[in-house]
Length: 507
Image 1 (tube, rainbow, N blue to C red):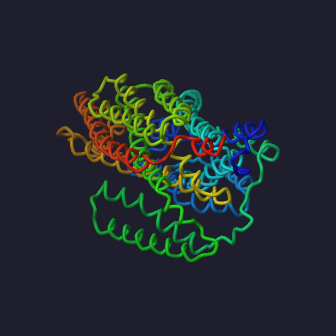
Image 2: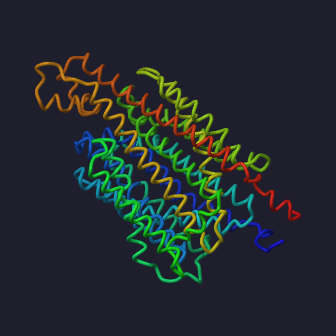
Image 3: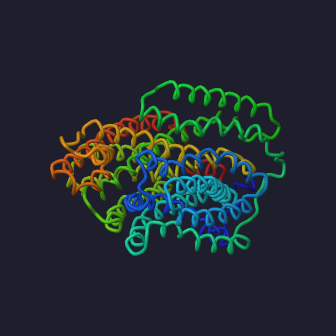
């Protein structure tokens, strides 16, 4: 029996987990706050449909691109140190986003937030991996970590909606400031400094190749979804493929690689990453559309829409806490497959809902979130657990990369699909002024902005067209989740219940 196998966390580690919950909670808040302030932000900054998607995508786009670099940087300079640097930067850039006077500057601020955010998630997750060596304790800690993200998403709509209703849309970004202050004060006493003493210098060529392999992906998806798979999309995908191959080849020959590609030889590691990617594509795009449905189709205020988003986030909370407990007796792959099966039913509800079906939409999204909670807790534990402690930052970064990339691709792909269906179904009434017609046919938010200048039937048709887009996009996402469910049953069936190896060693 190894020393690592018998070492269990004590009071300081659990207190440290509570501190690490704060940046995780903040990132959850940031996701749902932005979805719900979009209508208010759109009224103030008047972004185009493309700018609106970039405001949504820029954060996930940059965070996905820089996670591998930041996770490995944490292995080199220390995860606690990187967390403190990133928390400071995140708070400062959040203030910049809050006071952005134009859509262009808000997009730039969101991009900078992505780079700062890329330091937070792998730092928190790798610190948890080092603080909780016991398999069952680590699974519970990662479940709590995922739960905090869920709680952030539950609280974000309510808190953000209240701030938007009482102040202005930018106030929601200022939530990062008090969180940063608490984390910076508590980190030194509650968190250990963890680093890889054998790590070599950061290979800048590998950093450039990793960015070239990741950053063009979302843009290529956006281009293909909006304008078809043209020459530009093909060129981007070729660049991604060349950079990806060059990156992998370089990592195999470096003494201190940016990413340990030998981790992919572990079947559970690779399959868990694939399930996380597919699951987050569906959730990212669906969340974008559901929050818009509640405000634009049902006409709820941001605060009321936030209250309706509470039950789905609480379903994720229940799954993130419960899945690691159930997985002590049942194989994790089976637990993940069962909860993803509930997600498929949720997507089916979303695919058949219409205007006025608020309860049906919220129930469907709650079922979607139930599956997300389980794969976030168990899938992340499989990925992080496959790596040695000295490489935990790199493994945590891979987990977060596929999740953030999944959200960004989901918003781009499903959001663009919904927009394409909307524009294909809406025709401006004869005699409508050109500028009014452009707003009417461009998006539902635009149609509502000119509702007093077009017939009531045109606004009703716009709501119906948007809902049809939600239906079709949800059906597409549901098919993908069926594939993820089968992947859990086939590729993860060999993973034993949590702690089974320790029990076999006499624990």
